[in-house]
Amino acid sequence: MNLIFKLFLSMSFSGALLILALLLGKPFLKDKISWQWQYYIWLVVILRLLIPFGPETNLMGRTYQAVDQAIARSAPFSRQQTLFLDPKDAPYVGFEPDSEDADQPAEALTTAYSFPDSVSPLVRSLRLIWLLVALGMLIRKITVYQSFLRYIHAGLTPVSDLKVLDRLSAAAEQAGIKKPVELCIHPLISSPLLTGFLHPCIVLPDLHISEKDFPYIVLHELTHWRRKDILYKWLVQLTVCLHWFNPLVHLMNREITKACEFSCDEAVLAKAGHDNAQDYGTTLLNAMAAVGKHRETPGTVTLSENKQLLKERICAVMNVRQPSKAAKTGTFILTLCVVFAAAFVGVYTMGTAAAFDHPVENTFSSASDRLVETEDASSSASDRPVEAADAFTEVERYYEEDSLPLFGIAFSRLDESAQKKWLEKLYADDEIAFFSVAVGGLDPASSLFADFAEKTYAEEETAFFSTLADCMDEAKLESWLDRALKDGRWNFQSILYDRLDRGDEFDRLEEKQEKEWEETLRAEYQAAGVTMSGKNYYYQGQLVNVFLDTRANQSFYTLNMNPAGTVNIKIIRDADDKITGAAYLTETEVTELLGDWS
Image (cartoon, rainbow, N blue to C red):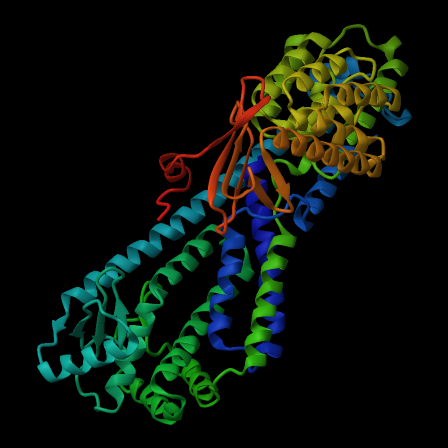
């Protein structure tokens, strides 16, 4: 399966778990957590559904890894399936049918049990269906919204009554909005609504609104605009279009629409005062009196959606209270829990197959061993080898399709020269996941292990070296460790100590080396006239304000600042990084280093 499609599915599954958790927790939190929180917490879920973020080790990654392992172990090597990837290769694999199938032609068996050619078109069809439906839904929503805007603009009548506009300005000032907001009338809408993102416009069914109701209605719509609820709603609609096959996403859409109005009511009362809850509830009831002919679209925000929702909103308005400190603390803790849960659930990534101690390559290593055993057992029945060109084509095909399991199986069938070419390609493409799977398919006695270990060590590619180290025996690891210790390669020492289960020894060695390095550095500084006392530097008895020590190749530097200091000092090094002395920093150098010093 294409890795991008698999990644997207994992995002949908992760989001579904979060949606389910929030829906199940809603009855317990409904009256204890503010509606503002219940509205904006869904942004975490939306980000989970749209952005592939998460730690390297996560729930979804492990789940997909387990599925990949199960497929790799069972599907290609099941007794009911052939081990070859192309029907014409059956004699090479040496499939041994059961006794009742002994008279069945090999060609028939290969037709019945070969699987990649039937799976790939299905996957491609699913991807195409998903894209077409998502694109169709998005185009339809945009088209309906544009049609609605044309309908609204065609019947708009701007309000020119100065008294009404003054009341609008007063409400805008109360809401903290300085941008001009247009006020218009449209007799065919069902309730007051807000359109436009850059140029907001409040649309009323008519101007027959009492002086008591008008500020609440306008303040409600202005609150929608100040919070950018239109943008939020379109973000939700994009998520629904992309995850149209996920029923929990549609439930999330309904919950967000509901929470949007509830949280807006809560924000209005926070501005107008909680003592006015009864008057605001009356305003909501009066808003239902004007019934129009046009139903609002997802791109607008209205004062009232429907009668059932209105009843719930009035009950919620009457129960709005100022949140206590305990409630605020609980809300903060709960938010952290949701964010951490979103990260923990995680997603499937291209590196998942190579993560968690590289279980995938272990799977293919054992699979390769079984393949070799099968070949040995059937060598007498095989009268021709696999053509190198065919095997190379299969590897290339599965690489292009991002199919790690099938790539690993096909790679193990290449000859050593072809394997070398592919390892070089994967190394050049920085494809660590495929490189890891390919290494797992190598013959344990292959010289390619040593060749690429030398290459990755010389070029300091620790990720690729780590993959190769997973396949080394203890003697080889010890040999490489001795070399890394001699060369002072700390990053490679860390990998090798870890593979030898001697991590504590590395920690002690690192701590000892750091102390020796610090003592040596102190002695070198002192020879240049600089002494250290804790975190303070002194030059010829004067406390240093700015202290700078830059290596010759600019790869590392030490910068220390002490506002109580009186002199600015820099360490002078030669081309070999040997300290030759110390000198005063000029004001120009200090300014260039730290910006405007004043």
